[in-house]
Length: 308
Image (cartoon, rainbow, N blue to C red; front, side):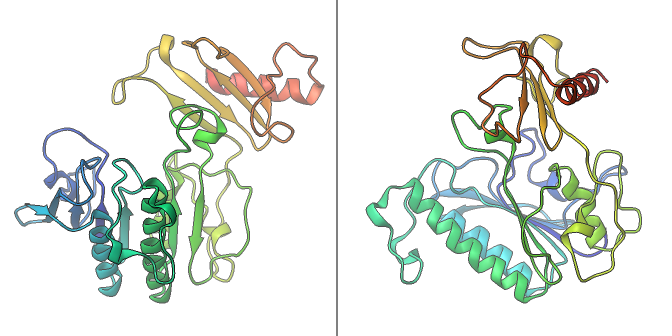
């Protein structure tokens, strides 16, 4: 992909050795960022933490920070925007625990933190810094994509429920369409979408489908096929191939969803089939009921997809 690339904020992709140099290390089969700054994984404190700073070809530095982590990540990203870096990937730690209170001087103008309830204050502070970053990027003619990696805690995070896997995706920038879209999009589609936006001729891959043509409305851009379904998997040993006994899977179309939980816990059903148009909260398992011809055909197709 052409242009400079930076990564700012939380690095949470690998717990192995080699960090932080691995973030900027190119290999024959893998590209990399040109520069990185941020902490490894979750923080023990937003006020006292270790920040790695590394550029390709230069020694890495580990700096003991005494500045609020959200502010540091935002400042580094804003500097990239001001410097015209072509691709900027930003991952904030906030509002993940620990829910440290932001510095009082960092209250958004005209807004105070009511009750100082820690999580909400941390989130409000993040929203303020995000707003500053998004406005600066849009003013500098960037296309901004904002995504979330998982849903809410409890029923959502860590589960295959829609409250855990159906997450927000926002976009701003010149030529970006207004309104909402019902298009099925996977996180892996960001890869080909960004590459197409950056003008890469060979932007496609077997797993990643660009949605750039739907994102932009006033710029001519090659349309690509959209997804007819989405799959999601969960298994306990990340980085190790799943085994059938603990391999939780789900597949859905715009309307129908099939879930399989071979290691279902008490209160969970091993298999469930939902009509999301009528039951978006997934409260009524249709298996064992009198299915319509349309529902039966949808179920057969989803079963075949999971077995493929």
